[in-house]
Length: 202
Image (cartoon, rainbow, N blue to C red; front, side, top):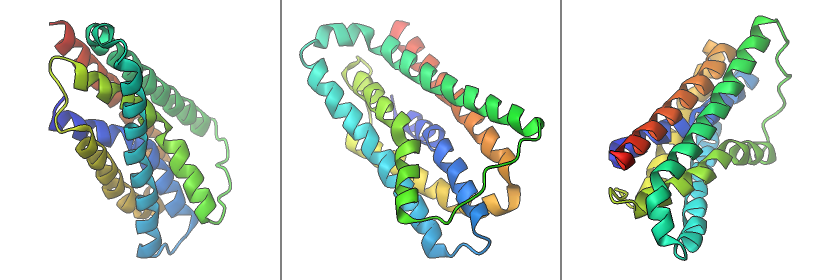
């Protein structure tokens, strides 16, 4: 797994955070830059921390079963990313159907630090499982570049860079792109999983 893969993975992982950032932008007609930066910062930090946690926890287990993990790394990575991507696609399809049926959107609430932190945790849970994928890539023959610390930093930075403008875009675009963002992110995750699998078995 290389730099390009990490960048694409980061963009795909950030789709839920981007969607929520759009919703946050719609909740306040005049969102100040400082608050938009705070939103991006929360999402970016949690998206960077979760892969690190997943990576090191997996490393503790993998050290005891290194041979097995090396043989199964491509399949494990594919299964995880396919599951995460499939979940995002299913959520996106469900929300698109709800929108077509005319379901009213949920009422927005004042964005507090506690609510923002809860959003950041909820949207970064998938990144925890991606930490397992990074560990699998690190112990595979192809290896992981850049190292996990830099990979996590890239994931967090990409999330931050996408979420800040998403706050403002949310006020212009509305809920439709929020649903499509999840679909796009899910398709990309599945695609990366297939790429890793093919590299591991060919």
